[in-house]
Image (cartoon, rainbow, N blue to C red; front, side, top):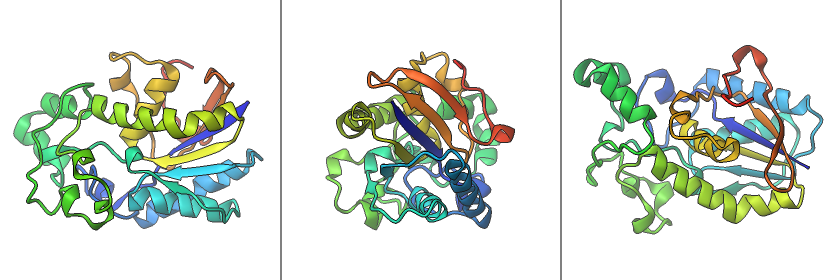
Length: 238
């Protein structure tokens, strides 16, 4: 059996400002750092020894993981993977969600945020928010860097990485922690819980609240729960 912990990063600066963030590299707020430390305490209370740690390329996920590792007193190396990044929000990147609701309508923004295969318009490559203009992505082949993404696009890259790099570790009964983002965690949940396209829009992922999943070697879920039950969201299937 393997223990898998999925953690959406703590509150980021753009979460607080209600901006579409996507691949833009923003840091945690003080509240987000506290959420990360609390996540570490919750994980520590399970008494599960974590063997391998993964995060996205993005600062808010990396710093969440560092704070968790510091809290559980683990100084091992961890793997950063751009494939675990947040969904790219295209031309919505950097815009305020409430202002865009007023401009485009709540239904349209909900469609952009929660639909399965609808992409926002592409982000202009001259934008400072485009990943090709952000230093941390300089070593990623340009053909792999999106201008916009749907949740389906995000799912494909996240699950492809999971199957290539993480699945084998679960087969070998390693315990794993992944620090990522709302949509990359949603993508993994869709895959692991076998959610359909009508269920996935309803799945909300809270910040800084570890989802603890126990899996057998065939990826069958034995048990799962949010460690902070006061902020738990409906898992739809459990």
